[in-house]
Length: 106
Image 1 (tube, rainbow, N blue to C red):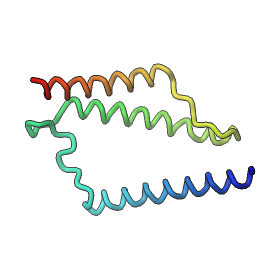
Image 2: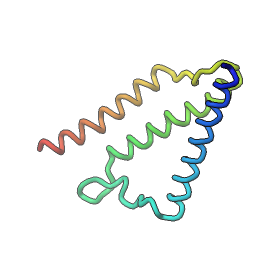
Image 3: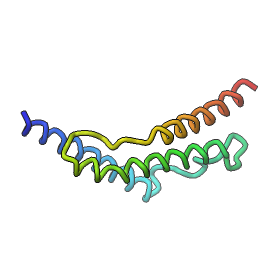
Image 4: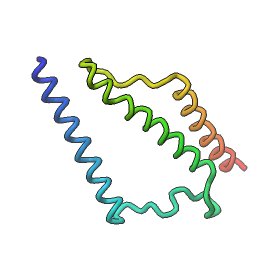
């Protein structure tokens, strides 16, 4: 069973690596349009979208920084994220959603 789980995890890792490469390629060749992704409904830069992107990038960075240590530990587990970071990320998403809801209902 251990060998089967090793093969399955390798297949899943290969799938996500290929998916990441495909999305990266399409971003670089312009097949995925990114112009205006941070713009609000008025066409100007949206503070809500920028803060959401920054906090998401921060959480991803902390996760990726902890990944080598989690893999080296030999146990099948993802790295632990600090509780404060999880709350900060949740608050960031709540601010983003509240801004969208306020705009939708006004």
